[in-house]
Length: 566
Image (cartoon, rainbow, N blue to C red; front, side, top):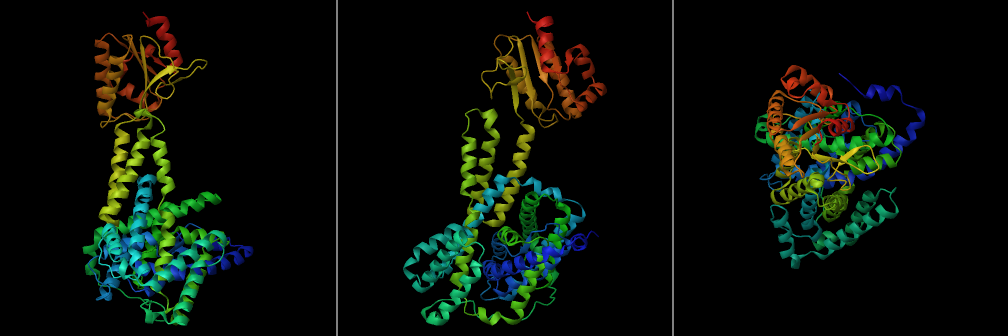
């Protein structure tokens, strides 16, 4: 089995040690309060966030290929876990929620591990950036809404984004003022420190000040809710009853997909920044091992955290030793310092979560998609941009209306539909000669391009196969029938046709027959190897004579003007 730890340990340099130690401790200071908050976000007792921050980090250090990635509980993943635990009331039966969360980690981890062994790392490429933008923005709003009751000190029975928001709005008169004051101060301090003092452990400082405020002013007597006693000690191996894993198979698949998508996105970001390569299949194995470890050691699903990884990088991390240091620091807290966290206000944890996920509401990216699709009124040119905006909008709306789990499934469905649409409806470009140039350009993009009278020149920007050949034939006939003056020849620039299947070859032959029956001569330019191979093995060899095939569009036009033009 491939163990990337062998490589980075064997090549480790002494000068990297100080950076890894500082980075690991810095991230630990941010991870501890965040892990507590994410456990509550997932619907679990706070200590399980710390449990999920120890063993998974060690396992990723062994199997992972990213140097900067920090793995642990995450905001989006935690709300997905909470959605998957719907129906399990932690307040009345926390054991059931804990077991189900562990089963989710085991199920997702098993799927990721198997996918890695089967080398299915390419799967992440099927989720487009606009779909992820819509999903993460919708998920972030759901996360923010879920924390509002904590921030205002309210008891709200809301299922979903809109119900929760309405529940908070309708109960504002019952707001606990000290709770809201603590949360507001915490959020303001976090934002100020993020902007002006980014190297300080802002979350840890806010947590410490919150505990001090509760203790000094006895705020629990004022109705301020606190985390309460957190059991000390490291998590032990607990194997849950695996019989219940079949009932959460779909949720486990959704968790596995989100884990991999977020982990690979963070890994690629830092690999590209520092010029090294990650192995997508090995990342599947590493993510699977981390989640199996989380499930066996009383945790819940974990993935790569962009915010923690960014902090890790900025603090000087050079290898996964920094992640090991972070895990060791969390383990020390579990062994000796959990008593200090009992008076931590839940409203402060809510503020930490809200500030952490605010950047996930990608307003700037949505605006960019909007500008792109408005960049031109020409549908053939800007259809992809409009599809991207539609994909983001549908996924965003579906996530808000239906929840995190359906939102992921909608995103996958939208990605597949968009892929099918683009494969079956590639751009068909009518070409013309731009004055002063020798190349022929798409007249939809460059209106100054001049078409050749009597000759329709077109380029098909994609493969030819059974699912799009009918559309290709329709587009060719539409251009021929709409040409003015009436054409006597058609020239196909085949430079973008990289493959042709048997169905497409047969229908292409029929199209050529139809054009020739109309008295048109069919010319071919810039045919690639796969298309030339099809010519040899099918009747297309007889449909377009060798003298009507050219290496360039310009030579084909010259032939038309000298031999065919009327």
